[in-house]
Amino acid sequence: MAEIEKRVAFPDNKAAQSIYGPGDEFLNIIRASLPVRIVAQGNEMIITGKEDEVDRAVKVFKYLLTQVQSGKELSETDLDYALNKQKESQEVSEKLKDVIYMTSRGKKIVPRTKGQWLYVEKIKEKDVVFGIGPAGTGKTYLAVVMAVKYLREKKVNRIILTRPAVEAGEKLGFLPGDLQEKIDPYLRPLYDSLYDVLGYELALKYIEKGIIEIAPLAYMRGRTLDESFIILDEAQNTTPEQIKMFLTRIGLQSKVVVTGDITQVDLPKDTESGLILIQNILNNIDEIGFSYLKSSDVVRHKVVRKIIDAYDAYYKSK
Image (cartoon, rainbow, N blue to C red; front, side):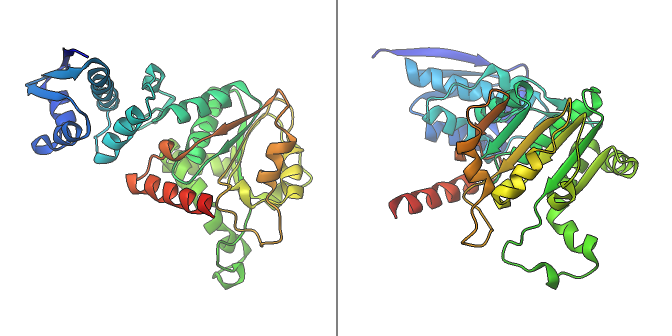
């Protein structure tokens, strides 16, 4: 196959330098990862090599440019995302440019992977969505972002966030404080996501007014939840009875997102996970959608993806 040459121009030197990295560190990582020749000249680069490899390199740089233009400071993890996508022959979708929500501090929240974008689209389309995948794929965070978006757009009147209070190796009784103080550590990740999306003061204001409710799953029993965006987090730690109870709380004009990681069940060994079972029960209902995220959708440190893949390989070998 004959070699071709393509030029990639960035809007200005500042954008180019953000992509090249300190001392061209990021550029050198890309050079070492892709079988092409890259010559950088200010805010323009010349990429030479086989056509398919040059196209892959161009897609990597275009993806990184979208991240820089969204106001993000690039890291090695971002390079890993872009390069990993190309290794898997996944086209970096133009939809990844879409801003889902902009915080009061001007932070633009966008899906970082194709899997995340499909997850967000599923939430828009279906009344009930199950987001299933490993840690770090943004399941809970993106669900909270969408809940806030729906609230601010007046599509719902309140947000309800819930989790089962199941110990991950620790016992509730050993934690200090009264019942609420014992439960709060289980709900802390939900608070953290809210504070990031809404800001600390506005989130507290909504919580105080009851517009946002954060409570253990047991508090949902006997209720009907109308005009609400309801998120059940860590659903792998629900029993079949608990998740059925939760899903039958859904009222009129409500939307539900259920998130969980079926590889991290903290229930007693003889207790079946409701989230695992329900995939076989509800998979043919039109109003319900399942979105499966995987290690390539991890948006934490790149070592998290490698840890997940290593565990998957280990259990598959058993």
